[in-house]
Amino acid sequence: MLEIKYLYSASGHEARNRALINYRLGEAYFSIGDYAKAQMAYDECINKPEASLNLKLAATKKFEQCNFAINEEKNPKATDVTALNPDINTPYNEYWPSRTVDGKQLVFTQVGSG
Image 1: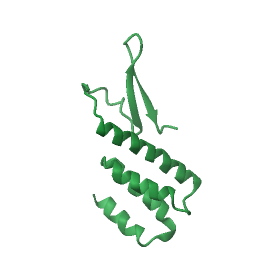
Image 2 (image 1 turned 180 degrees about the vertical axis):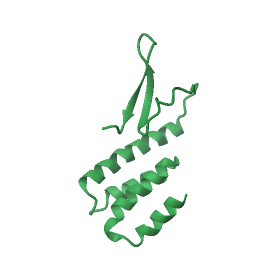
Image 3 (image 1 turned 45 degrees about the vertical axis):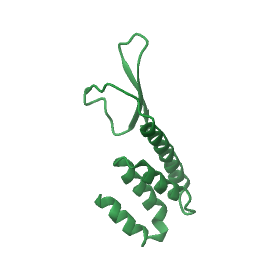
């Protein structure tokens, strides 16, 4: 992925922005499903002394999401996938779809909407 190539290149030149570059690198790897590399990039971000508290908190949250994804990949569960209305999927991370007790609604846990 071209974005990853440029972020690696920038990380060698921009000492003052390395924490943010590592965060963006984590985002790039996360977006293509390479959770182990994403996790390493988030970890580097968290451990940069120049990283702001907000950036460290965001990277920590994404690091934990990588843990979840890696664990799920190691322990897959059989599921039947049904395409739903396009309004269901959002740009946020959605997990654990569950039916209500009466079986009439499907609810999700959503991470990232604020």
